[in-house]
Length: 155
Image (cartoon, rainbow, N blue to C red; front, side, top):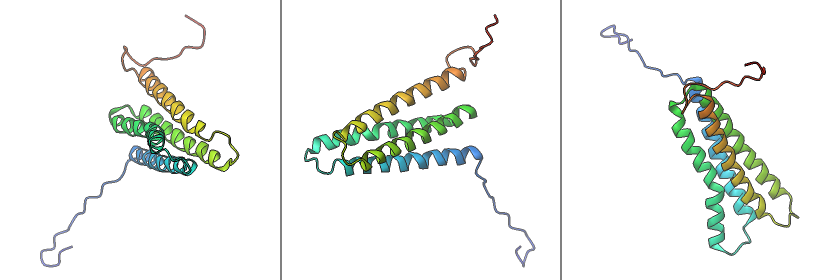
C-alpha cells in the first residue's frame, strides 16, 4: 500500500498449469537424456581415433532427441490427452535410452559396444513415429472423428 495516496499495488502472478509442468518435465527429461546419452557414447568411444565415425555416431545418437524436441514444439495445439501421451513417450524414450547406454558402459567386456548406439536410436525413431502416428489416428486427425475400438464382437 502506498502511504501517501492510499492506493493498493497489485502484482500479477501467473500460475503454471499442470500441462505446462508436464511439458517442462518432459523437456527436462529430454535434455538430460540427450546429454547423458551423448556423454556415454563419447565415454564408450573415447579410444576411437576416427573423427568422422565419432561425428556420425554423435548425429545418429542425438537425432531421436532432436525429433522429440520438434514433436514437443508441435504438441502445444494438440488435444490434452494426446499431449499427455506425447510427454510420457518423450520421458520413456529419453530415460530408457539413457538406461540402456548406462548398461552398455557398465558391461566392460562387451565385444561390440557400438551395437546399442546403433540400435537404440533406430528403435527410438520407430517408437516415436509409431506413437505420433497412433496419436493422430486415435485422436481423429485425418478422418471423420476419433477412432474407437469395439472389442465386443457385435455389429
